[in-house]
Image (tube, rainbow, N blue to C red; front, side, top):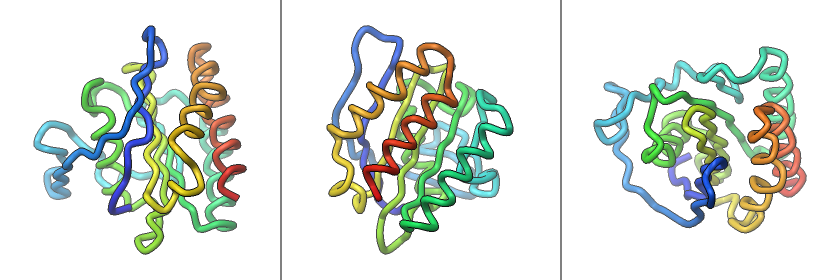
Length: 179
């Protein structure tokens, strides 16, 4: 995915949420796996599937289920979705959004000519969630709809420590809206 827009950055345990558009200039150097010289990026070869749990918040069976949902959806629609969980060793709270965007670019989520990828980034340790949509997704899934999905289906589960439930519910709503 060459160009990804920032849809939403949330800190689900804070008093409020941060919402807005941001188009960061990102420098990704695949040889050093850094973003803007500050963060260690897992190289594209570290991508294990559609669901990449670097923070270890999911069980293997949960990862398999999410991967299966995403794979079937991609086969049906050509829209690619990646889920990634990261702990604070990869990025900081302040740079989480930039990191998720760079990771989606590095992994090539979405078809090049369709710009139809979505990256769902979560960090339980940083209390951050971000959904980045390619420009090809914008017409089908607006910022307001994305915010509603996060607020209504994902955040309540995450607050209870039920990350799989939140991801599965959010994924179900996203895929239903994009079919």
